[in-house]
Length: 180
Image (tube, rainbow, N blue to C red; front, side):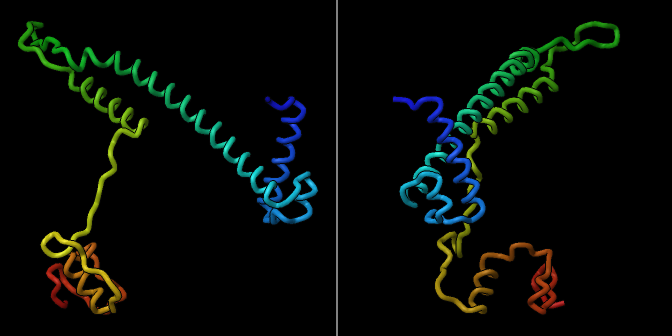
């Protein structure tokens, strides 16, 4: 059964005060929090978690609505650009005669950008994976190592940026690793 409007308002006010006190660093077992009507620190903690979850749910719903609106806008733009991007149009010479048929490459570029935007909006693109591998493509041997062993591992894997000398190592080397 849902709480009355008055009860909901009281809960909102209590949670707002609780949140303000917690942002100020007040502990859950502080009397100021208990004076808000909580029987103990555990019930105050649970109520704050409920408030934050409700806020996350509302935020997620708003994001879903925004994403839907953006997808509808992209649909309308894609619908307008698609025919020019996929149907060859006549190409005219200086006299106005048709010499060829070709796609409108600006429309093709527009369609590709719209598709890219849709993929980003909906999280369709897979993240790029990066993997560090050791000699021969195997695992990089890691364990308790000293600085000398660590430098050897870095040399084996390759310097992160060969064009930049490390100002902390006291050694200046050229691009081939020779001392300058």
